[in-house]
Length: 121
Image (cartoon, rainbow, N blue to C red; front, side):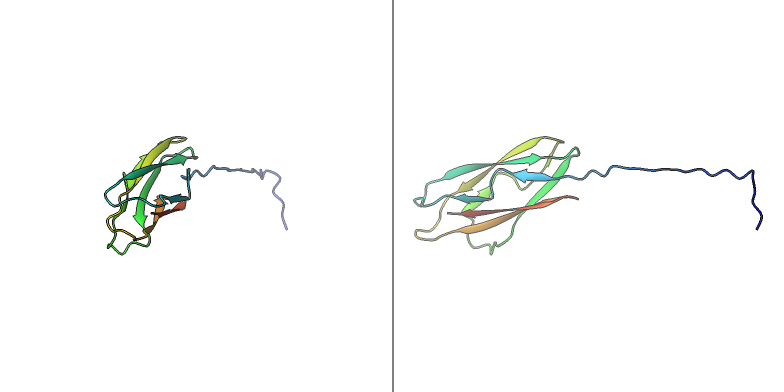
């Protein structure tokens, strides 16, 4: 075997940083308790982007059968800047006396995480 003394060995080291969006919610559950038909109550949710990249999200109802729209959100999609936050309000307006409404919302972050928020009224 021949050795080439003119051969030079070089080492190339590469490194990288991956950034992906990650948001958190100020609440996991919201309970409006009892409320009279015709009355309205709202409660806040703060979504916080804990990453260094923009977080684009969409909110969908997980267990919605379309029959009871007593619980609604102020928005269902948006973008949160890096290290920023966004306030959303949840509104409960009962339509039928004696009916308990349970709605779960799933917040899906494009390229990131998923959060579920359970609401009851």
